[in-house]
Image (cartoon, rainbow, N blue to C red):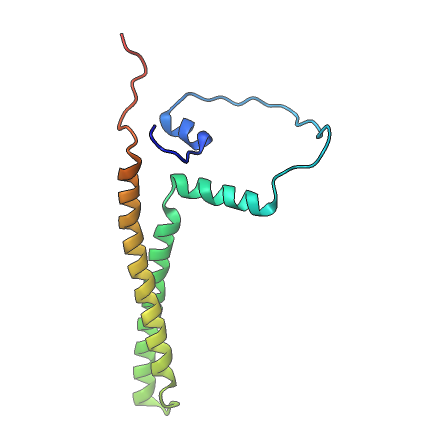
Length: 135
């Protein structure tokens, strides 16, 4: 693998090595304290999450679509309310424009991030297959 920043546990699963479970009891620390701070653990988790999944990118696009649909519903409600009742001038229009713009921006970011994720996969240049035995 030509990657420089790898996550071994996920990489060994991705390669397809057989695995098993070994149960054991964790012994108490003999001395000292852990060197892992909460911030370091958070960075480690983010690194591992971004190494093997693009789900957060898809979630951004999905949420953008949901916010955009909410904006459309609010826009329809504002138009109906305008013609059927008295409303406060300008306020519904402002809310609808902000929600529609936010949804459109999030949806666009989701689409762009999926393209970037696909390019990132190509740059990793992982092999399409792995030969187990050569005879």
